Length: 334
Ligand SMILES: NC(=O)c1ccc[n+]([C@@H]2O[C@H](COP(=O)([O-])OP(=O)(O)OC[C@H]3O[C@@H](n4cnc5c(N)ncnc54)[C@H](O)[C@@H]3O)[C@@H](O)[C@H]2O)c1
Image (cartoon, rainbow, N blue to C red; front, side, top):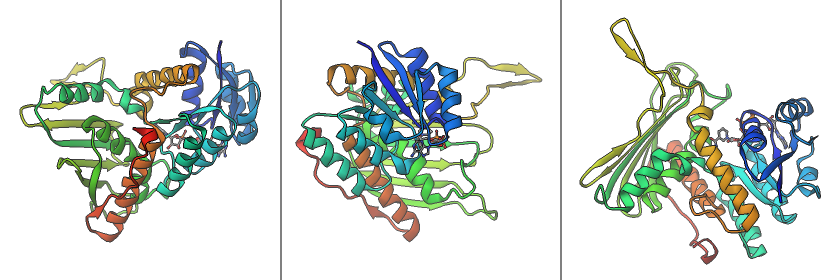
């Protein structure tokens, strides 16, 4: 049995998912590439060898020749399309964030719970990155003592849109850190504060967040969407007896003119190529077996990230530390 997948959204991320499904995903085939821009859908479908193209996502989801769906359209489309997948009984891998509002995540949660089984995997793929996995196992095995702090840097070359704001850095970029740190530490956030460096031009300034976890750890996150020099993600987990930091990932170093240098990627696709592949393989197993993958992010995790983002936006706007509020975790997501 082959899992026939529809990829919805054929932009940067959707094209990458389509390529992985077509070329790198045993047990799956690329059935449909759907984008509201027909030309974009056709280009990606032809490049990857998809069976068909479409422009209406809801129609693509209900097709009889589609077994499962990957959603990679813009953030505001995620929750409505996930709900359409749940209604038609198709398991879905939804790109992050599940939604930008906790309320919409709760609607998805209610719909998923009503089916009595897990239907949705959220694309927080950093959980599948080896650096974070090694940090988590070092902590879980007691090799660094109890966790005290986790420091994070997330830098992009330039903002994806001219009207990108500090609040969008929190709702669109930071959810990766919100989720993976929570996954590594194994606890939730209690409070968040956020501030922006002052800059004289109109380009969005870096946002720095300080979070306290319910177990008393401090988490720092810098989101700099206009770092200019390259795509650069760093993390360090500080324990009571040792510290474990992510190495820069580069296969080569150039030695020249009395200096040594490594190159940066222009974006995340190269740095996290293996994590996307492992995440998507886990999704195919989920579709085949119905067993939710151990490492993957669920609707509950998508909700937890949205709650932190919402509190972070408030903290930035009001210039004060804000509590992170959540409903109690349902037994369904234990
Ligand atoms: N996991 C990650 O590391 C990661 C990285 C980048 C982006 N993302 C997420 O992936 C999603 C897509 O990001 P992107 O950078 O590829 O954006 P993009 O703008 O390059 O692509 C989005 C595509 O969706 C299409 N689209 C818009 N509305 C649609 C609809 N209703 N139905 C079908 N297609 C529609 C657009 O025409 C466009 O081609 C975003 O939600 C983003 O947050 C995740």
